[in-house]
Image 1 (cartoon, rainbow, N blue to C red):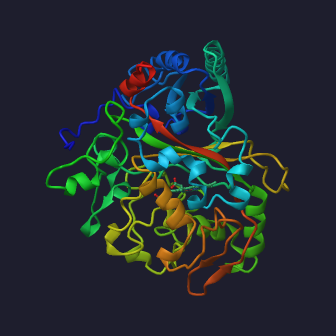
Image 2 (cartoon, protein in one colour):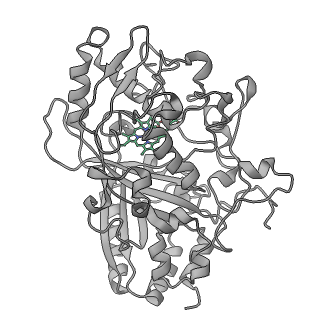
Image 3 (cartoon, rainbow, N blue to C red):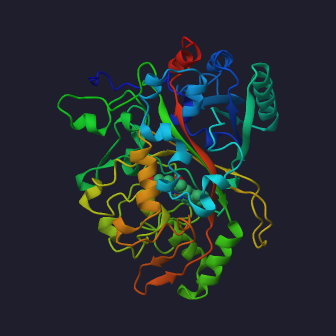
Length: 460
Ligand code: HEM
């Protein structure tokens, strides 16, 4: 039995992209999925990469021009020659992989793995190298070095996905994105108000770090008289790592805009911006509807302390301000389903998404170009955290009293969904063409840096 000893995070051993939002600090991110040619050569390549990846400590000499982070699929651990008993110590959903969980995730029909981009969900993607860069020259150099090293070791790049920040840190539908994040003890305690665990009397506390980083006490540990640590892979792999979900989501921007502008003709004097906000639960600049129901706060800063300090049940139990089915209300319902948030707080994720593709100019018809969101998130349990949000809250409305209504922003499981906007005069958004389609994805393990070295030098 493993018991909790210390709660100080070992920042020098935790990969930097988990606890730090590089996406907002860097203009470009490229995700490079590599297929390992041979286990020994794979280990040699990873040993070289381990010296280059960033950790979670503050930068002493300012922001580097570019840097790397590394994650592995289960097929990758097998290709690197890890023994079955070690692989068996990883979670069942990680071992099944995202494609293996497709039915559960609702990835059927247009979202099914057999329609995914080549190289994703087939077992060909072994290692994900995430390259963040300040600008094109830094990105070009980092990618050229990476491609050369991959080729020199006899491996193959199976997917290379470029992504980049859009002006104002917006996603393609036009909303500010990525600022509402969980507050973690020992890392982001100052974000507890609105980001932590809701307590009685409007108070909050940061999450136990084991919700997001393996090898530390989680919320169960804090309640357990024996202070047992949550399940994690065999040491040293179970220390300072986490699981990552990587999902490429195509966004049909023209369909989203057309649907809302057509529907808005019958909504509150044609208020299109407000109807868009009702679908997301925030105005385009990020102001929450529950605190700003009539108009956005002009100076809203999602990163400011307390910016996300709100609840739903007291101020807006019936969804008159922020609809019960709005994207942010269903993806983090807080106390929306009662019990002061105790039914929801174990299902939080650290989101690190980045848009890909060029924006569709305002007023333009669909140009058939690929654009969307690379949705990336980190959590200690993919099934309890990411999958619970996707399956129980986004794909299904039952827990919110919304029947089978799926998240209107994402679209239904196979086809588009519908949505009721609650209010004095409820408004119905009828069935629509889906706005978001899955192009592929992988479940990954993000090892601590010492664990990555252990994988690289595993006796083969
Ligand atoms: C193309 C797809 C998606 C778009 C355009 C999108 C857009 C947004 C936007 C605009 C916000 C509000 C900004 C913020 O809170 O940072 C948000 C919040 C959020 N989204 Fe999404 N999202 C997408 C997919 C997903 C998926 C697949 C999940 C999880 C399975 C998810 C989970 C969340 C969560 C947990 C929040 C934070 C809510 C809160 O803490 O209040 N999103 N999303």
